[in-house]
Amino acid sequence: MNIPLTDLVNFDFKLRKDDQQLYIYCRSGYRRTVALSILSLKGFKNICNIQGGYKALQNEEKENQ
Image (cartoon, rainbow, N blue to C red; front, side, top):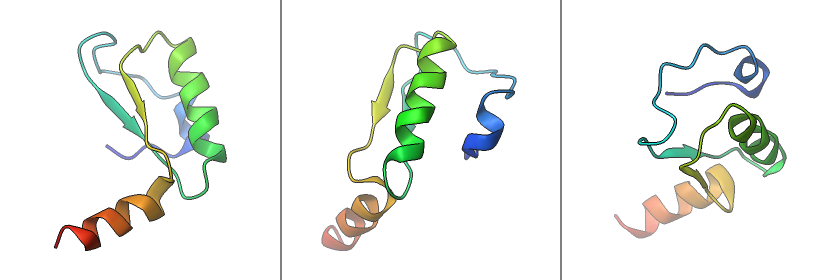
């Protein structure tokens, strides 16, 4: 599920807060940090903050092909 940061505050979460792992990332890191704060305030506990953002995911995918 892709949720833009501008929609995250008002998003009606249908995800379980304790059981599901959430992965958050953005291109540079700023929005990821804000998203982590919002999700934490909403009670989510299992949040994986992907270091390096979208570019790191792309690079890792290329390396694993």
